Length: 75
Image (cartoon, rainbow, N blue to C red; front, side, top):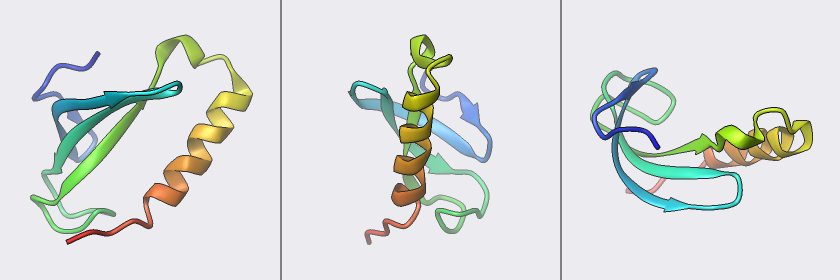
């Protein structure tokens, strides 16, 4: 679990939104302009489960999902 208010790269982690098989999803906000848009943009941050770190297949799936997720835009 990541504490609310933690900074990950250019994003500030907010409340937990949900958990799945590969990771936990948090609401976040961009503190600088970046791939998700201008500073202040609301984003979903998915953090890979620690117990899967050594699982190459799970990590490849996680990377593919992240690539697709980067293309999603919603007003």
